[in-house]
Length: 126
Image (cartoon, rainbow, N blue to C red; front, side, top):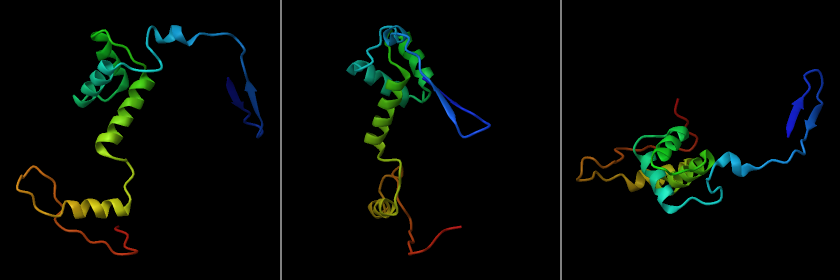
């Protein structure tokens, strides 16, 4: 399918091909539905060891004889980050809760704490 936008007008043309094709050949043996547990664990291990790019992760998987598509890797990493680090979106309520949970100075100097907070309705820092 191809959508062509005409620059001289607000019209567009949609080209659709009815050629038969097979996606299985392009994945060369990758199960496009599910990743095995050992492949998932390996992807997470590679990701946690500072390899963040999907193509680099695919190369490292290939070195040990494992396969996954870039979409599978991306989706797995997004679910992993959400599960382990929480949602990316921060609301004011979440920020207040986080500050309240981390207001005490911990005994371990490597732990995070919030020294002071100031929230005021209508306050926008500049």
